[in-house]
Length: 434
Ligand SMILES: [Zn+2]
Image (tube, rainbow, N blue to C red; front, top):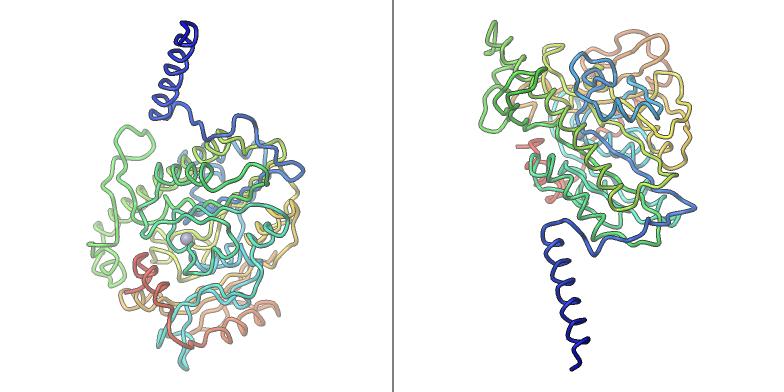
């Protein structure tokens, strides 16, 4: 062997060794495309749901705590409304509306209360999104897109019907398993292993950091005190709150703690959003014609109306969510349904949907609280909001739209058949059922 060949092999060997070493240390990634992905003529489309993030607790929407620096920064080159109405009161019905572009009675994905009394949880099951309505992912698929769903919320899974049409799906089994850095890594893995280079990308991401269980708040933040983590499991506060056992100073202290860990969850959600977008850029999917849409599926009660949690009454604390679109397009006048995100991300323009929302009971939570035993619906109009409560009827003058909507909610609310065992397990794991 000639001396120069030996030298060449030696140099090549060292070079390969260095690359492997850097790869192991995550400094370089040989699987990553070396050039920017050419997704033209259809740029990357991204829909992010910040789970459980109520608009009025975002600094981007005027909240006094600095909970959303990333959204604030995005908003400088985006259209943002802070008064959109979530179409459902919890993850399943709202995501079903985002994906099917239909309201709850039409897509039928929700908790279903049967029996004679619509307002009482006499029997319950949960219906997944059925197989018939076309989904957002399917519509993107028809247009030649590859479609990825990466959810930190376990409900956005094949068992709930929500991921129908996605080419690749990543989700945890439990809340809290895929928050923060784990969710960022899940997006990284999806972009690394689940994509091809020559097809445009539709990426759906659910960031669940603001959902229970809430993280410990570390010391050193100047806007929120250090706090212990807070979770329903192994805790009686939830039952104590609704039974009235929690009262006076103890209740005030509990709600302050809840608000702090929730606000920190909102802050972490915003931070995770920023990191997810960094990963999208890192992998070359952020192109000049990328369209980003951000919203939330519902809010969270923090003691208002003497309620905590979400999924029951359709007051603004549960239904008031943001909608952000970048680059900016003209958004309809408020009030607007958050299900406009379907058209915003698919078409870049809006077909206005009436701002309607409904909540149907969860039996497991009803047994613990009584607060989840009602079916409520609401319509937001220029004149304000009209609520319907299964026990009390309408609060105000219902419009034709709301009356018709309520009739359809009622008609869709008859429990039939058995709950799919896989979905039941997922919902149990997520704390929605006993
Ligand atoms: Zn949710």
